[in-house]
Length: 166
Length: 134
Image (cartoon, chains in turn blue, brown):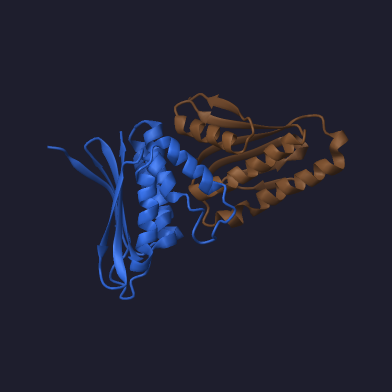
């Protein structure tokens, strides 16, 4: 039977200061366990992009009951990164399109999409350069899945799970 | 050519552009809270470099070597690092003596690959320097 080990599990309010604490914990774990440098940096890289995605795109729960979450686990020779956050239902189609576009491509096409996106002039100050999903797809060799769980008429929970083999 | 020095923090790189000592380096980790604010002085500096070349072209003989020794950078920083490299590439196509040395640790093939992508996208041939792990 495969063993699952939780390295990090956080659910709560996320601001830039929080990301520093979470990332330091991840770094400490990765530094302590002598794994391959490429794996170590891919996990870190994906964690950063996932946390920044939450920071930039999550919608606050008006009742302040549902908070974003981020979990890092080791299972079946893989690191599994899971994030969840609230999203406005009206934003789901656009995000789904971006995720599908990245999910179904080979590496060469992903690199072309990355090059196209990075060459765009506009960087939205609070929304980044639009490269997060493509970076995750490239670093995880497209091993990611996602779901949208409807909460009510306005909101859903968006969950993203990314795997990095080691 | 003026100097630009920005100390590193846990989430932003060290910027050391020091004409007096011929040291031009970007090193460390780059995931600042606001990459656009962090990289503005860096992009402004390279714009000024172009103006400086226009005024002092005949006096510059020694190549200016930019050393990139980045441990990690996030996707938004990548956008600004590429913009910076594109501007350097543009100066080189104008005939100015500019080189980029992209450093990577010998067991970090992703950092090499991302440097090769940066070089290709900025249409500027980098020198790749493999660093031994001690």
